[in-house]
Structure formats: C-alpha cells, structure tokens
Amino acid sequence: MTTQEMQIAFEQAYGRKAEKMFFSPGRVNLIGEHTDYNGGCVFPCALSFGAWLLIAKNEEGVLRFHSLNMPQTYTIPISEIKPQADRAWCNYALGCIDIISRRHPEAKLESGYDLLYYGNVPAGAGLSSSAAMEVVTARAFTEEMAVSDRGGYPCGYTDEKAYRTELALIGQACEHEYAGVMCGVMDQFASAQGKKDHAIYLNCDTLEFEHVPVKLDGIKVVISNTHSPHHLDSGAYNDRVRQCHTAVEQISKVKPIKFLAELTPEDWEKVEGAITDPIAKKRARHVVGEVARTAEAVEALKKGDIKRFGELMTASHVSLRNDYEVTGKELDSLAEAAWQVEGVLGSRMTGGGFGGCTVSLVKDEAIDEFKRFVGAEYEKKTGIKADFYVAEIGDGVARLI
Ligand code: ADP
Ligand code: MG
Figure (cartoon, rainbow, N blue to C red):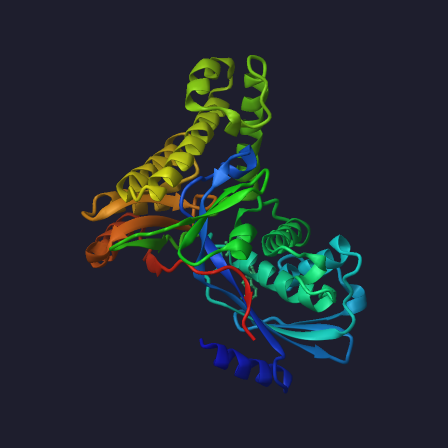
C-alpha cells in the first residue's frame, strides 16, 4: 500500500484529509538473544517495514481509532483514557498517549483526534509490529501534546538521541501497562533509533548504544517466518528470567555480581561450579556465551569479517537450542536447513523463541536456492509453508508529512 492510498483510506474513514503522517519500523535482532534482561547487549536493526499513522484533530473531544489491519474501531473520550478490554488493539496507542501525559506534566491533550493505522510487519512474527505501533504513536503525540515553543524537540528535548530514547521508553511503558507484556526495551529502541544500513549495539541496562554500519557486499539479511502457532508465552519467559536470577544468586556466593552479563567466559570457568541447579547452569552458560559472542560479532562486522559474524550467528542458535531451550521444532528446522545451503554464512532464531522468525546471512546468488531448499525442508518436517523476506535496514521513526 502506498502512502497516497493511506491518505485516501483516511478520507474514506473520516470524511476529510489527514493533517500529518508518521512512520516507525519493525526490527530484527541480528545477535544477542535473551541477554537484555541479564544486563547484556543486543544488536538489532530497524527494517523498512513498519507502522504508519495518519492523524487529524477533531472537535468532538474523542479519540477515534481505525486500522487498515483490524476490523474493530474504537471511540474513546479524551477525558477517559485508560486500558480497554484485554487484547483491544487500541491499547497500544492509548497507552502511549496516557504515558506521555504522565511522564511530561507539560504535555496536554487539548483536542480530540482521528487516527488511522496501517502496518506491514507480519503480525505476531516476532518482528515487533507492536513496538512499531507504539513508537509511531509516541512520536506523533509527543509532538501534538508537548511541542517545544523554544525550538528543539517535543517535551523540551534539545538532543535528538535523547528524544528518540524517550520515545522508546514511552513505548515500553505502554507495552508493560496497557498490553501486560513485561518486555525489555530493545524493540521500541530499535524502532526509535534505527538508522539506514546500520545496526544498533545497545546495552539494555544503561541504554548506551552505538550505530554500527552493516556493509554486506553481495550478501543479504534474509528473514524466514515459521508461521508457527507456538509462541514464547509469559510463563516460559518468566521461567527463564527466574532461572537466570537463581544463577546470579548462587554465583554471588563466590563472586558477587548483579547481572550474568558481567561474567567473561574466563570468569565462567571459575564460577560455574557454584551453580547447583543444573537448569540454571545451562541458562547462565547461554547468557555468558551470548554476551561474548555479541561483542565479538560487532568487532567482526567492524572489520568486515562477515564470515565470522555468520559463524557467531549459527553458534548463537546452537546455544539457544541446547542451553536456553527456546527454539523448538519449527525454528530448528528452518535454521538447520539454512546451514546446509551453500552460500549461507550463518542462520539463527531471532526474538523470544519457539515461533517467530529466523535471520540468515545469504549470498545474493544463493537466495533463490535458499528459499527453495529451506522452504521445502521446512514443509516436509512441519507441514507449514514458510515465508521469506529480504530485509532492508531502514531508518527509525519519522514524520513524513
Ligand atoms: P509482534 O511480535 O508483532 O509485536 P505482538 O503480539 O506483540 O506481536 O503485537 C501484535 C499486536 O499489536 C496485534 O495483535 C495488535 O493488537 C497490535 N497491532 C500491531 N500492528 C497493528 C496495526 N497496524 N493496527 C492495529 N493493531 C496493531
Ligand atoms: Mg510485540
């Protein structure tokens, strides 16, 4: 769908023209999985697909929500902004508007608005359609509610990076409070701070980050969608968080730490004996290894050593499969088929796990064979047809009109 078609759709929904249009991307994490809540780094990049938002003020004092992806519409008075019924999609937008006014006392919603969303991130595939929707809403409504009269960015920010980080934090708070998902900040951060042809080396604890150029001559990032009904549910996620916590407690008896990410692989050799719980030990081994792999992968990319980067991606998957146990049949079938294709430099699951997508580095000339072979193997093993997207690394959130 083109932006012009979205404008026409807005006119059809509301009988007048949109005043402004915004875009924010989905993301894919290249390496650094399940490190975020352990004080470690992640390495995501923004994609060229994401969520668009068109808005216009109305005089009725209500927020009207339309989405070209959803049949339900909502009308909410601006005096009654609070979480709606479970799973109502407008929660991802409403929460951002609420949180802006709570984090920024000067921010006021002074009129009603008509909103129209359109997204082209495959929903629920672990590419963060929800973060794209949150960050695009945070971008639009910080500007509407708290535009600075002193120049600079909305909410009084003078620094673009700080403003974009705030958009990510608004989106994350919305996800916690209005969607009930206790996620880390990676997804919203990538959507807000993305940069074309760069990935983001982000410490999720300190929010320090670096844009690293992704120069892949003759190689593409290919995303493969399992279309699996399995998801990393909050139970399995919370179990992993708890097991890592147990490992930190037991290790702290011999070496006090706050996060597993503080340990180098050399430290690990010395302290692993202190972990008496065998499951906690496996989980911690993944985290310590993944933190080191992510750092090494970033260095390899900076040196142009894409071969090494690919090997580390594959090692990441093996660790997520054997030690963290968050892959499952669908993700393993995709990754293991990809490893057999000549011209694949590396392949791993991305996102929380169980379902969702894998991410692979594939030489241009091997892409057709990749899709054919991996697609056929996957269908043979699971009975499901996979989908493939050649990713373009795009910019973060922006106002378009
Ligand atoms: P993902 O991995 O894609 O982020 P989530 O389950 O976290 O999966 O978020 C998907 C939910 O986000 C959808 O069920 C819907 O409620 C909301 N959403 C995402 N994009 C849109 C959109 N374009 N229009 C309306 N709702 C959307
Ligand atoms: Mg999500």
